Image (tube, rainbow over all chains, first blue to last red; front, side):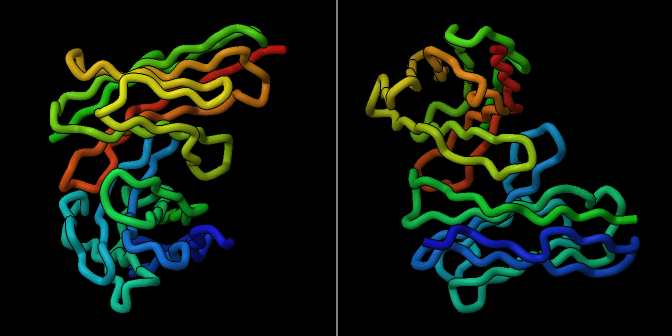
Amino acid sequence: GAGVSQSPRYKVTKRGQDVALRCDPISGHVSLYWYRQALGQGPEFLTYFNYEAQQDKSGLPNDRFSAERPEGSISTLTIQRTEQRDSAMYRCASSFKREGQTQYFGPGTRLLVL
Amino acid sequence: GENVEQHPSTLSVQEGDSAVIKCTYSDSASNYFPWYKQELGKRPQLIIDIRSNVGEKKDQRIAVTLNKTAKHFSLHITETQPEDSAVYFCAASKTGFQKLVFGTGTRLLVSP
């Protein structure tokens, strides 16, 4: 079946602009996660959802970052007033159930803020 | 919060040799430990995982061991092949907290 998909794959934006990153999880997966991965580093947790409920947003760096999953499927990560330090690979993952289940990662969105 | 340390940061072996990557974690409540392989420009992919009720798990040339007392777990790759070359990440999570906390990664290079 289709894996986790993300769009856009690449996003170049100017400092101060808002960006919206989309994640389409594997069909039927209850849980959806957002991570940020700096070059050469492991993914860093941002937030996650079970169905449409945001369960933990402790990893969001500041209030410019927000995420939603209104219908329990597709999710959007929004970054307002982007800054150069926001440049990174943003990865989405999904899992079938909740705890201790394999998280399948998407291809990521490479964000570059000029 | 949980902290996961991973060693070594780079590992070079000859084809056919074994490779071992070690991780330590700080939170004794952690109970799920996956290992991901990430090839250049690709997404992380799960290669093996272990839960705290098991001490060792094998899948062909790959094995993972867990020592709960010492709070460390290791990835063992036997008979390494050039296609094993990649960055490997360990991670940990615990009951009630679905997020994965990743190690800093090990770049494995297998030379023919």
